[in-house]
Length: 171
Image 1 (cartoon, rainbow, N blue to C red):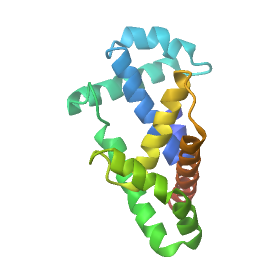
Image 2 (image 1 turned 60 degrees about the vertical axis):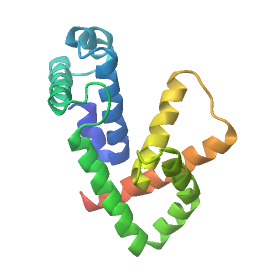
Image 3 (image 1 turned 120 degrees about the vertical axis):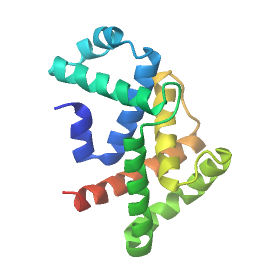
């Protein structure tokens, strides 16, 4: 089983971020499957390398077909984000515990949306972008100041709760 399939079943937010990472990884290697095999797949322990190779190749094909070789996200992944945002809207109306989690992240979400200059419109996307941006900075060896870490923690808490409720709904 490809790790993305496992993540999709267990934690939908991790799945989305994994897909964003996969898209960026394919871009970094210019969709060169020989390089993906050499520098990525060959380093994944206990994996069915042919299955993994086929998976990366299929993601690359979809990205090219959708014209997102340079930037953007797969339509299928964005549809999951849209569904997660619908769950967010439902929970805001019906789940007191979720409203409490959301209230702790709302200021960071609104600030993130505002700073995106219209590129981000939905709270869930703002949280995903915040977490993914944090992961990219960590991979680059950079550290965030305490105020930004507060936002990352708030985004993580919101996504964790959403993922938990997603799994409950989709099991």
